[in-house]
Amino acid sequence: MTTTRGLRDSDEPITMLTAYDAPTAAVVDEAGIDIVLVGDSMGNAALGYDSTLPVTFEEVASRTAAVARATEDALVVADMPFLSFGVDEAESVRNAGRLLKEADADAVKIESGPHTVEMTRRMTDIGIPVMAHLGLTPQHVNRLGGYTRQGTDQAAAEEIIDLAGEHVEAGAFALVLEHVPANLAGAVTEALEIPTIGIGAGSDCDGQVLVINDVVGLGEWSPPFARQFGDVRGEMLDAVEAYKEAVTGGEFPAEEHSHVEEDLDDLY
Ligand code: KIV
Ligand code: NA
Image (cartoon, rainbow, N blue to C red; front, side):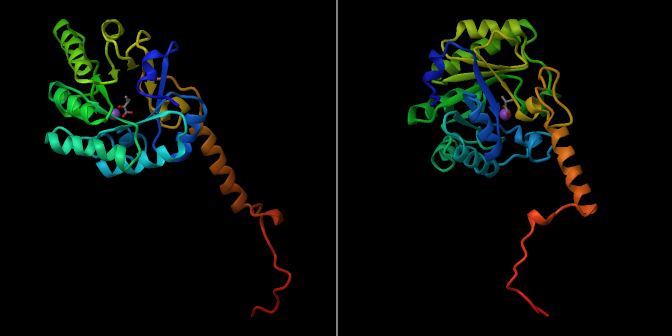
C-alpha cells in the first residue's frame, strides 16, 4: 500500500499516472504505479472538453469513486477542479473533505498559489493530505494566455521556490511541478523535504507523472514532453473495425456465440 508518508522514504523514483475509470485504474494499479491521479485533465482526456475549466466537482467525485473501487495498492489522489476551491475557504475545505469521505480518495491535489497556503494548512490540520501543484497550472490558462512553460525568468523561478516552501510549511505531502525548466525543478527538489513529482520538468524530480492517454497512445495529440509507450488508439480502432466487418459480413455472431433452445417450437 502506498501511503503519503511512505513516499518520502522511497529510494526509487515515484511513479504517478492519471486514471479516470475503473478498468484503467485497475491496469495502473496492477502495474505497480505508486499514485493514481484522478486529474482534472479528464476534461480533455475523457470528457471531450478543450480545457479543464468545465470539469465539475461531481465529475471528479464520481470518477474518483470509480478509480478507488478498482485500486488496491496505489495512493488515490483526487484533483480539485476549477471553482471547487479558492472562492471560499470553508467551502474549499469541505469539498476536499468530501473527496475523501464520499469518493474514497486518499488525498487531494490543488493547483497552488499564494491563495492556497492557508487552505492547505487547514486541510492538513483536519486530516486531508494535500498535494501541491506549481509551475504551469492549467486552470489559469485564461490568465496565462496559453499552456506555456513557467518559471523561465529569475523572479518567476524564485516565486515558485518560495511558494513551494510555503506549501511544505503548510503541510503539503508532495508537490507536482509542471512545465518548468529542469534546473528549476532540480533546485526545488533539492530544497524541499517532501517529494517533487514532475511533468515536463526534467529528470531531477523525485518522481514523474503523465496523463494516461499520452502514455498508452490513446489520444490524437500529446504534449512534446510526454512519451507514447503504446498504441492503444490503433489497437482499439483495429478491434472496432474488425467487429464492424464481422457483423456486416455475417461472421458474427457465429454458432458458438448463440444459443438455440431446442424445447421451443411453434412460437408463432
Ligand atoms: O490533471 C492532471 O492530470 C494533472 C497532472 C498533469 C499533474 O494535474
Ligand atoms: Na490537473
